[in-house]
Image (tube, rainbow, N blue to C red; front, side, top):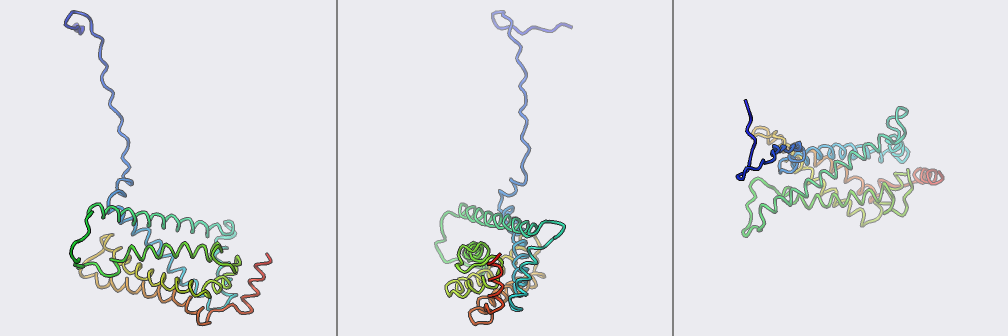
Length: 268
């Protein structure tokens, strides 16, 4: 069986055309595509919120050691640095936890910011009439504001009590001295109080919406869901309020024991 040689109209032999090579499709980045949706961003906010809430509860409860005196509170702080020893170097697990929290914070903030932009694009024109808030309450409507206050407080809190940049009397390791020196300043104490209240509102709505995002909501379960959100917000807020108020009213102070510990750390 012979094959016909392709020729042009004038009889010239035409060169054989190569079959087109199909382009290899790049594998789909389903994680990125999912995060690009509103639901994906809500899931990221929910998961990072769980991480943040877990840390907030442990941090608030752990700091109650300050009421046991400077020595006990210092032991608590040093215990955090010694976690995992001698299996891992000192402060290794502490820094690992800090990096994890930093990643969760960045993810939470980015998801919240991009979700806000996405919602504004869907509704470029502001409401012309008063809104009827049926499902939303005051906490949900002010979520962006409470979140901004909490973020500002986190940055200041790190600069104040972790790095010492915003605390002129900061002594590395002398955590009672640093806490009292910080909260003895009235503007800082007021900012702390405002931030704690904002955090409580943020926790309330965040916990409430978490169950809805994860699909764990029903009319039968919703009352308990609200009780849990209220309970977490009240407990965390109440504990955190004791630190600025305790310092302002002299319950938490830097006595001789605290000063001796600060001098010891200063000499190192």
